[in-house]
Structures are given as C-alpha cells and as structure tokens.
Image 1 (cartoon, rainbow, N blue to C red):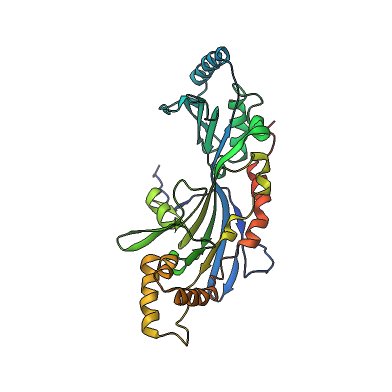
Image 2: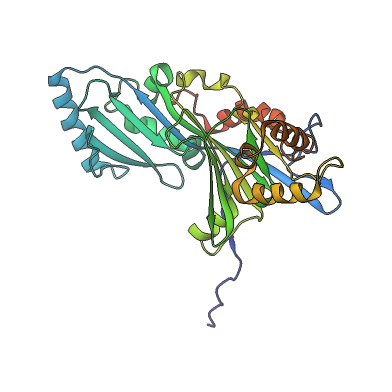
Length: 334
C-alpha cells in the first residue's frame, strides 16, 4: 500500500476567548468581524491571560504536619499534582496540570513568614477553561476546606492580566497615552518596535502593548496566526475578593490610543516633523514631555482629535460577565 504524504495544512492554535466586533463607538456589536471600510477588517478578542489567587487558612502545627503528609501522599498517586522546585518563602511548591490541554497551575502552600498568605495559586484561565476549574477543585478539596469553593468565599485576587487582541492593527500605527503620568518604556529588536509598557513591573497597574503575532510565531513555529495582531494587556494587583470580580471596573478606559495626525495648519512643518520623529523613537508620552508646557498642551490636543477608530473599550467591557461565565471562574464546582 502506498503511504500518503503528510498533510501540509498548517495547524491553527485555538484558545478560549470572547470574540468582539465593532465599527465605531456607539455602534451595535454583533458577529465576529465587521468591515471598517473597503478591504479593511478588524476583530477584537478579550481574554484573561493570568490569574493569581491567595487565601489564608489557619492550621495548628499538628494539622500542618498531617497536611504535609497528605499532600505528599496525594502527589505520589496523582499524576496531575506533583512537587516542584521549592519557593524560598514556602514549605511546599506544587504543579497541577488540568484542563484539556493539561495546562499548569502553580500552587505554593505553607508560608515561612506570618505575613504571607497560606496558599497561592497562579494559572491561565483561558487555557485551563471550565473543565480545568473543575479538575483543580478535585485536587484542592483534599487539603483545603471546600476546595476551590474556599477561594470563591474567601480568596483574593493578587494579580489578574486582562488582554484584548486587536487583529488588523499594527503596533507601529498606534500611539497610546495613559490618562495620568506614569513611567513608560519601549522595547525594540533589530530596530523594530515590539513592546510598549506603562508602569513599573510590580506596580498596582501596568499596561503592556506588544506584537502578539510576532511573539506567537517565535514561540510556536509552524502554527498560523493572524497578522498584524496587537495585544493590549492590563495587569492589576492587590484586587478585592474573587467573588467581586464581576464588578471590576473597565481598566482599558484609563488608556487613550491615538493615530499620528497630519501636521496642523498653524504649526511649523519642520518642528512638527522633528516632533513626529521623536514620537516614533520615544513614544508619545515621552516625546510630549520634552516640549515646553504650552507647546506640549497644544500638541496633545492635536493628538486627541485623532483617536484610533478601532480602540473602543466601552462596548468591549459589556462582554466581561460573558467571559467570566464561559471560564466558570465564579461558578461553584460540582
């Protein structure tokens, strides 16, 4: 029998996201893609890329010893829960693999210092999905009162990364500006802009804007991804209780995203060209900071008249409850 040649069809990676489409601010949202103009289509996808939950459980010394024995016995018989390299601040560090993709959940327990939470776990909700939450609950209930339900009742969100991917939008065409002054950084590779950051890495709020298509092509060669694809990712720390996540305010409203406007009629063309070059190299916020106050205020007003038409965070957030529902982060497991 003649062997069939291997298929040359590329594999398309799929993740659990909420598909959002739009025309302009105020328009009705529907479908997965909407034509903005002739030959131009842009789609938006919102997802939770990372979630870190913490909680405090008070055990006596005797209970802790018994718990450690139980954990090790569980890890020996359960392939989805294994001890890994130790965290210097905790007595136990474990890795659970859950969901259809067997995605990792990193769990640390037993703090060595009293001010630390008893248990902390970190995972990607979009990767583990609803099935992963159920499997995680089945692991947690062996050593945590109520399992995942305990987090629903008393757990806190130490960190959450919420992302929106804009397909059809190139990173180099956007000029973001936060609503308040903050530290900004730009990272390039071989002269090409790859990442824009606002806020320090450990700050309460941080924004990362980067070329997601380029990142995926480097990390997963052979897979097909839409290009251009720009990700806007908000990292929020020290949030409230997990059960209050549904009431989280829209973080994307704190960011203005503009396109480069043409030179205004009443501005010296030479000066504007130099400023535009500065924006390309430093970013809009840093370029504005170099200008005299009156000129800075004037140029900022010019930019505010040319917002990126694809940047519509208000209707995106209408899908926040739907996203939480699909991932079943707030649902009581069976």
